[in-house]
Length: 245
Image (cartoon, rainbow, N blue to C red; front, side):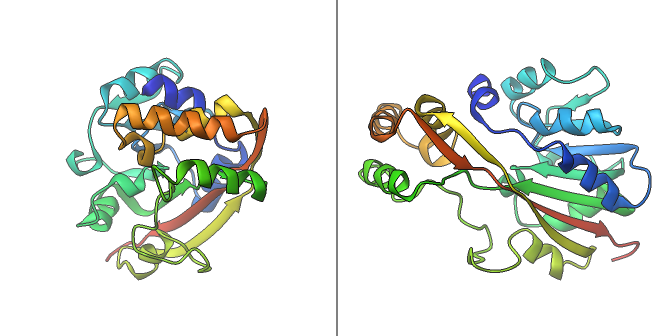
């Protein structure tokens, strides 16, 4: 799936890295990425200046990442829960990957990886069709296979709440302060094939049996016009590591 992720997953706006680094309010020399995938966020932050350590448990994802990032990026094959806590970073961030980490002990472990006063950042967001009629047609085509294909909020926060997850958890964590939520709007135009290619990378479809997944995606693609517009807003959460818990 690594090549498919690299081809079909949207990237991140250039101003994202600058905003995160400016929030730090001090030089950010080192950064640790949790669940780096194929490195779309990795290359963004590496270009912005910090020395990035990219961590990812899947070897094929890491192999794809190494094809796209500069030699200065250090890579570690490990899940977040298996990372050694013998090094601290000015910045720790996760790009559309935090929901894969285990909730038990998540924030004490995260804090252990961040210098006191350093920054944690998480960013991502759903890809949604902007045309209601197209969305309705896709929902009807998908219905025999999946009722929904998004990732529900890990802590059950309703989508209408002003503060979304993980900001909700960061606000009550003894380890973090100065929690902020920002949104970077993105509108993209995709071909029908590229849109269904993106869907093929979502966990809801990946959990279907292969033949069922192929049939579902084929039916969806048949309902689409030649091109579709999507919103791929990047919802960003920032927080500062407290000097002491």
